[in-house]
Image 1: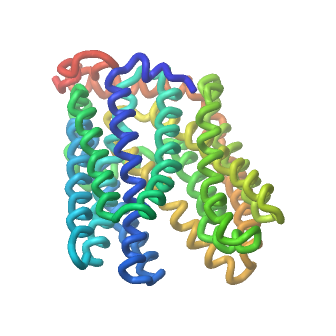
Image 2: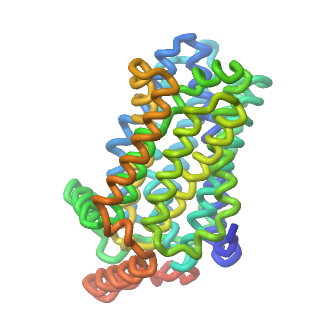
Image 3: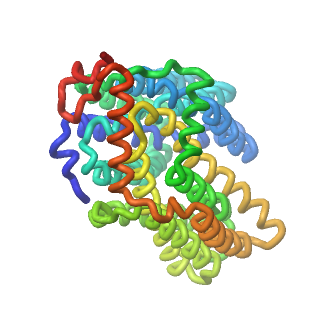
Length: 434
């Protein structure tokens, strides 16, 4: 990987470190809450309802968080999110220490955690273009993906070891400690004030963000192609049934780990992505490759072939994610970055959730293998159709997009009275609205 942003930007290094440690702890809790519901109820339906409780607040709060990220200091908004997560984890710890933990509190905390994530994540995503120069955004996107991959692999594994060896209260206590590390890192960062003439959060400003996204075919392409790929190609809900055919419960963990392993492999070998400028074409090819790999997974009759296909699928999805992140961070003007980050959050959150539901429903009609295979086929067909319907996305060149972003930022600053945004490394005071 290209580590230049970590060597040249102190603030990016602080965000990378703090968010990485915090994310690791959050994945530990992500596994622990459903496990505690299982211990208290032994009811699969109640465990499944956690996902519904987590999705509903996100649909609303992602827009709120995006609008706030364009109006207030983004660093302060991230700190507020970490403090809120700390309080919620503290509630989980107190609840676990009770003689009889309360089930309703677990659902409340799960819902509130998703709401806080919707508030914080747009600011966390929108902060990156303010911490590194434009030419380092591809490398920064890769590093952020690497951080997520490591957390998603190590967090559940650590949670499994902890849940098998210590009381669940200790698990929540460890997550609580990760937020202390994150808050210290954020405290040493410089302020990241809002862009000049920020728009007050309102329904009107949220709608303006949606209209802006709709007016940009390269942005529409990133949202629609990813949602299409996840809706048709996501089949995690069927892994237990595939495992039963390929070796039983002992191989289930391998099936879940294989896509993450592919994502991590794609990330640590991704220096080449900085030399690619046809980002729309790269997203399209990666999404199609994901669909082909899913078809291979559905056709696999042996464990090793199934794992290879899942590794290839995870790698393809990560390459698509890297180039989507580059498009977002290199082309969206700063005064819109928070609101668009909220839309991005919905695009990559809704697809997998609906995709797992689709795969389960389709199984009733075409069986497990048929659901996976036809999902992959429809993913490739949908990707091809969307690329044909959005030729501007297919032709998109990152160099032209970056030039337009710079021009839009300058025009916005000029309209705000000549205020300018601080370049990476400049004093925070230089970025204050005029």
